[in-house]
Each structure stands twice: as structure tokens, then as C-alpha cells.
Amino acid sequence: MFELKNITPREYQLNILETCKEKNTLVVLPTGSGKTLICLLLAVHRLNLYPKSKILVVAPTKPLSQQHLISFQKNTNIGEGECVLLTGSISPKKRQNLYENSVVIVATPQTIDSDLNNNRISLEDFSLFCVDEAHKSKERYANTKIAKIYMENSRHPLILALTASPGGNKEKIKEVNKNLFIENVEIRIDSDEDIKKYIQDKNIEHIKLELPEEFQNIKKLINSVWKEKLRDLKKVGFTKPSHLVNKKDLLLLQQRFVKEIKNKNQIAFYGISLTSALIKLNYMIELLECQGLEPLDSFFEKLKKEKSKASSILLAHHNIRSAALMTKDLLDKNIKHPKLIKLLEIVQNEIKLNHKSKIIVFANFRDTVENIVRFLKENKIKCNRFVGQANKKESGLKQREQIEIINRFKEGEFNVLVSSQVAEEGIDVVETKAVIFYEPVPSELRRVQRMGRTARTAPGKIIFLITKDSRDEAYYWSSYHKEKRMKNILKNFNEEKQTKL
Image (cartoon, rainbow, N blue to C red):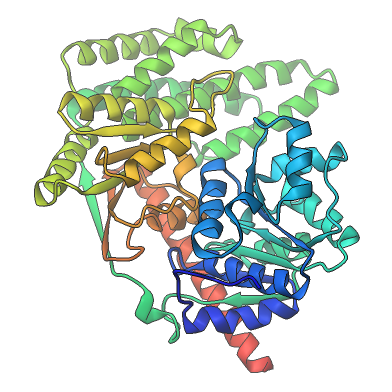
């Protein structure tokens, strides 16, 4: 007989469990309110109902998968040797053996998808398929393929999908439901009666910073080239007002030019170089305003190594050359972006209040992560970077290293974890006192996930660093309104469900 240990379910978790026992269910709960425990409860129920069956749990990253494995080992009486984490680093032959001899299998969707494609695994004996971070279940994502094969082959199929942020509109939620064969949705928002007493307070602070004059001078140079290239774009038929043009417009226009090349339209070649140059200029301004001089300087260096026509055009422009030289000059003078100075001040104050404070700083770009870590270490702050795996362009961390860093952070070896997007989803460090957004993000999903890394078992602090009159402000309000809209959609879902009952 399998059962839970060391943990007591809350009433709302038990209520949700009853629905999950009967139907494929999408469970939407605020971050830190115990989605994983519902997975454990349902897994134990299914194993007792079908004694020779197995459980499959997938999560998008190895660190998150590791957390699920630890939850099963710590909080159920399923033998430790019967719960396994499967990764691509384990040989295919050994993985096949583990499939056959384990009760609970935790993995990334990509690992399971690969093993299904190579006939290393059959899903017929699995009585539960649990999908964490289910909002990622888009049409071509591995979750979706696994769900289809699972429903077709399992003797006793049941799917549990978990997320804190299913999407900003009903269509996105419906897409997840369709892809994962969901028959019922269980939603709780932080104002619901049965959950609100468990929700910890989040103190949200916005710190607005002026872009220094030296930075403004570089921005003027880049902006002048931006306007010049937009005028050139108008000559080939682009009519949108200059002040309204954004990256999305440029990417869509670039796609149009690519299609025109197939029709042997000579202007299209010029159009592609032009839009590429504008996308790069747009990125330069974003780095300068929102990230800092170091990432901008790194980008200028990358441009010099690139062999594209767009890069050559930009580097040939005297204003871009001047901007690059001014950037280097400010770096030589040790001038820092005001966000870095303010970040250091916040971190020092938090550590002064409690030398064991745990703080997570989120930044969009790896260059910025490296820059923040370097600056904090120079100022005697114990910190570590946390980024994804290496790719062709950037160095990274192996999955084993990611898990080691999270464990060291939990154990208090250092105070500050400086992370790219990889730590946004599901990483559970319950004692995290503060989350700092080095820059706001335009996505409501990423905003919710970042904010959810604090206030899990005690009140927490969320701080947004915002450069005034920059895209930081636009991104902040974009994700804020999208999150508000998502919460209203979830609330309406609940109200509609209650009406039907």
C-alpha cells in the first residue's frame, strides 16, 4: 500500500484531487500553493488502484525534474530505488532497463519523446501521465506528442496537467486542453476562499532610474541611424509611422521580404539587409537603456565578427563607430549603468538585515547575467550565475552543474542567484526573501513565474528596476495588464463552472 509521509494535504488540494481521479484535469494554482502535492496524491492513488502500473512525470528542465524526484522520495513511501530521473546523459540501454524496473519515472519531455521514437519505452503500463508547466504544451512540443501516444496505448490512461500561468486568453487555455486531452479544469486564484489564507504577502516595489547623460549621448547616435534606416525602409514601401515601429513589425516585414526573394524580387535582398540592420539597432538601444555598457560593448564586438551585410552597413556608419568608441571610453572610466549601482545597494541592505538572505536576480541576457555577477563579486557579495546549457553562440552550464548550484544556494553557500530565464519556472527555494527584476519582461507568463520564486512559505519582496522613458516601462505595463487579463479569465472560468453546477 503506497501512501504519503512527512506532509499533510490542505483541504483545497484534497477537493481538487477528487476531480483529478475521474478525468484528465488541468490544475491551475498560484505559484507556491502545492501543485506538486496534488501530483503525489494522485500518483499514490493510481498505484494503489492499479498495483502493477507506473507513473510518468515530465518537467521542462532537469533541475525542475530533480525537484519532482526529491518530492517523491521524501514525501511518499515508494522506494528511493523505484523513483528515477532519466536524462540524455544516461545510456539508452541503461534507460531501457530503468523503465522496466522503476515505478515512478521523472524526465524532461524531450528524453521521453526520443525514447518513444526509438522504441525504448512503452506507455501501456503507465496509469498516470503528469505534465508540469503545462502551458508549454503547444502543438509541436514534446508534451503533446507524448500525450497522444499515451492516450492511445495506456491500459489505464489519466492525465494531470499543472501550471500557475496557463495563458493570457481563452484560446491559449483551450489549446493546452486540446493538446493534453483535458476534460476538466480546476482553477484557484489567490482571492478564492479556500486558498487565500495560505497565500503569502508580496511587497512589490518599482524603482525608476534616470539614464545618465553619457548614455543619452550614445543613444542619440544610435537613434540617428535608426531614423535614417527607417527613412530608407519607407522608400521600399513600408508606411507605418517611425515612432510606432517595433521589433515585431520588423520581423514580420523581414519574413515578407524572404518570401519575395523566392519570386526573384531584387528589392527584397535590400529589404532583408535593411530590416536586419534595424533589428540590430533596436537591440543596441535596448541594451543601452535597460542592460548596461558591458552587454552593449559585447554586442559591438560580435558585430565585428559577423559577416552579414547588415553588420557591415552598420559598422561602416560613422555614428555607430562613434557610439562603439564612446561605450569603450565610458567602460575605461568604470562608468556603470544606474541599475547596477541600485542593485548593489538593494543586495547590501538585504544582507545587512539578514546575513543569510537569499535573493534571486533575473536578467534577460546571459551577457547581463555575467556582468552582474562580476560586479557583485567585485563588491564582496557571495553570488553565482544560473544559466541554461551552452549553445553555438554562448557558454552555459551542464544540467548537473545547474542542480549543484541550486543545491548550494538552498544550503546557504551564497546569497544571490543571478539567473537567466532558466530559473523562472518551478525552481523552489522556499527561503528566497526577494526577487529582483533587472528588467521587466513583456510576457505575463514570465512575470508570474519570476514573481513566484518568492513568498512561498513566508512574505517576500519583489523589486522591479526600471529605466525611465525606456522600453522597460512599456514591458512592465504590457505584462501587468496581460497578467490582470489572465486572472480575470481564470476567475470567469470558475464562475462559469459554478453556474453550470
